[in-house]
Length: 369
Image (cartoon, rainbow, N blue to C red; front, top):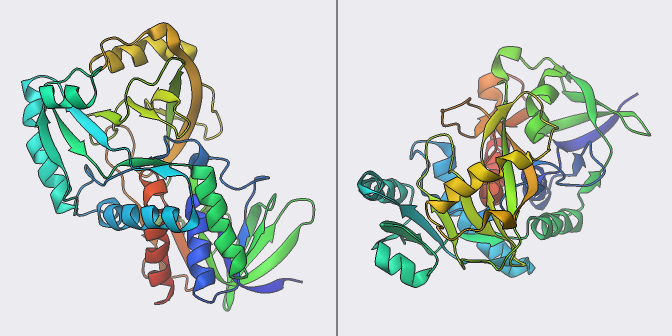
């Protein structure tokens, strides 16, 4: 026997929670199935907690399309729901003539994405803002910030429960099959059960491709194979040297080792990036300290490397491999032919920033299904 339910969201990271909230507030009866013992235990809690402005993404992509509305919606949500955050601003620093020349096209790219508040400043002006900084010029981004990711997810869950939604923890989807009138899911855990849902949205993040392949009837050729981009962070034990976020110029595959701080004032460097086979290995290699320090000394010459300590690591579910720029993928029935299924794949950075916009876009697709 299988219990009949309206809508199932698989995964209770920030994307799953935001999507479930959008569905519940639109009047759907929603159950969130999460394999872990708490929400947001993977990518959503293992990142830099930065609210991105939307600067470097290709204008034709979903990341670019959702970045600015997602950023603005997130700030408003944080204000209205009393989620701890700070619009601290960011400096993207250029060192040397080649990098300085790259500021104008980067600013132009950001403006095509709708980012209209950037300013190019010279090195002297940047150093007046941040006395410990070394650079020849910089882009000042006043709309960048930081957010308490746990507080954000807790507030999203509160809205879900207020709208009648339910979160089931330690409830992994082990398999499933497409039926003529829905999708049947087998759910493991201490009390295994079968659910037949009128709608299934796969927000399983690092596991989204495996979950999709476990559901018989979703064509395998429509399911991407994710690449695992691991990023490590080192924390700084001294007084935070900067009040703003400090970033090098981005590459297509990475934003580079940058300086951020959390809302408690803890400074940190990271992430680096390496592509790994496992999506569960969160070890931090202490031998990476010297390379982190070398990267940061380009803009922070007085960095004391002895104050860098291994912090934490996160893994991103990327659609592209090394050296390539990925994007978000919303796999809807027009792509896979399954009327009751929406798959969200490759929702990496800026997933935290864009979670509400991702959810709104997913809801707009569902309304047409």
